[in-house]
Image (cartoon, rainbow, N blue to C red; front, side, top):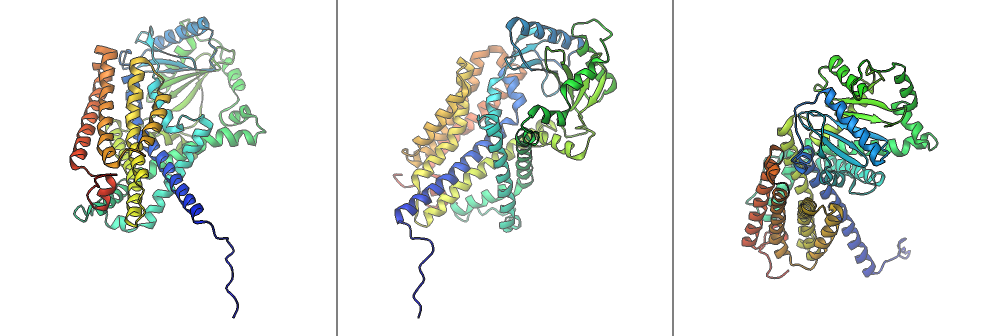
Length: 513
């Protein structure tokens, strides 16, 4: 009888194996943390336009601005740039519209707001909104790295959604079954699965559109130059046209007929209104600003398309010269141009945004309960991780808490939001390792509510009557109502005195964590 063969893989010490298992679990927890962070910030960032208006509640608002007013505003900015010595490559003019009823000019070094006559009305920057949106789409990393990370996360989320739907077919059969009387752990699993099923189309669309946008930007910024020997300018020229050639073509039209300030811009807006009356301007881009190759283009809305805008280029006399083809070009270009509105819920008005908020919060809840259920199942098998559970709960609540605190400090004293957010999130998450879970369970939502309530109070203290204008009052009211809900949730959890882990297992919370 032949002797037993030795295993090919050597036997590892038990301590080493346990360490690797713990590292594997912590890596999975880190991935879940990033996924949750992206989901909850995305749900809030649906209202990015409203946050921009809330951040500067005193800026003038108007339904529209005349081409002459826009021309005067650009003339002011051109002189301002010359006086300050700035040298922006591109200058963007945000024209008034239904979603953003303001005239704002944005370039690398500054953002300026103007009234309906084109007169300067003060600063127009909205750094807090940028802080929120950049956290969502790049995690405040350098954009080349951040977009790659978010694009990969989008692909993983699509895989999780599709894989979960295929692996758990009973989720659909039991789509309207909630066994709330079947035990705490079973009811928690049911809520997790029901939210996943009810929001499946939304979750898939948001994840897929985010993945497409992230990976497309990576492809354009990385793969494109690689295909042209590292010449990124040539790569961009192949996609959007050579800027020098476009500028030379534009100059052939000669000077505009009128002599108003920024006559080319005035004429371009008049041409768009005349030739494209159903496509109002959203923004105007002045590329190669201040050079002989300056190019004027206008991003115009198309109500019959999901695209954010079509880009129209204008010659030196303000005549329509060309379009990028997002509205009427090939199908692939139209689909790619539609990803932003699909991903951000930037269509259908307030009703769609509220729907995106609800489903976005549901997706965030799915992320959190997925980890809770995993920890509960491990505890049921005798492998409890109370410190991981407590740290996870702290992280979940620390995210909105630090968003509120960072925003409050910026509103009051212009304290940079990024270091406050990340330092606070790290410290509070680590604190959860040593704070008993039964305390974290009620204290975290309670503190989050207090910090959220501080934000509208700080906003009113900073801006006074402007905080009660249409641009500020409903956002402040929404924040205050959210704060009351969170404080009430914390009080309810304190009264019940049970942790999520204990609730998931269907047993009372222990006296000590």
